[in-house]
Image (cartoon, rainbow, N blue to C red; front, side, top):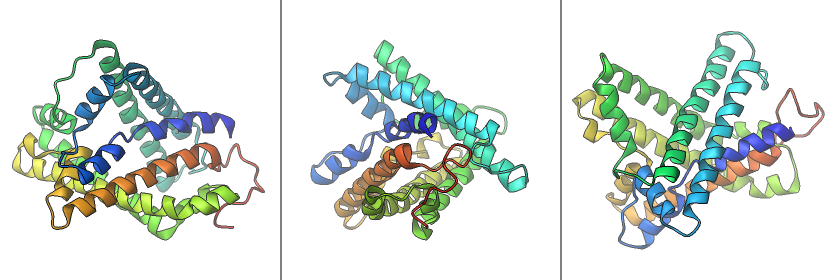
Length: 261
């Protein structure tokens, strides 16, 4: 469980929009895109070491997810459902590893064009043969991930993967809300990518920052944006809790109690 604990700490570094969402809700500022958020972090005191730590954490997450998928450390099995779950582990690991390389490159070079990384990648994909279909498929996968996270939080399925302690019991409500809200925000990003594929317009694609900004434009948007920011903090809490209390079948004590027990 120790190896899994160290590698899963990377998850806590993936979500740099939590504070930005709350700031945008309180002040008349916009929730920036990922690249802008990282560039802003670089200009802060100790920003470069922070970016390096985030990049290394993302690469560690890559190693963990690929190893978990290949070695099946969570006992998903070799049937169709299990293979899909393991492929999902490897895929998410590769995606976050690519983000980690980009973060390290930003830390080393300091160059950033600003704007939305989602738009950049969508434009590159659409320039490829069948690019619109690739983007549409990505939107469906992201929508599925959003539904999965929301369902995971609503149903309490995540509790079967967390060891029961006084701490995990006390933090459980925050984890639940964080998963549900994060799933909803992923759904917003998926819809923006899907619309970009439908209209063949990469400018319609938005990342997490753009999804948060769209909330601000709605009725009671400031309250929705503040709630989204708190929800993302809850999701970050979930990842940190998972880093220390995740029950990994092939490494954990088989008699360990979970939050479902």
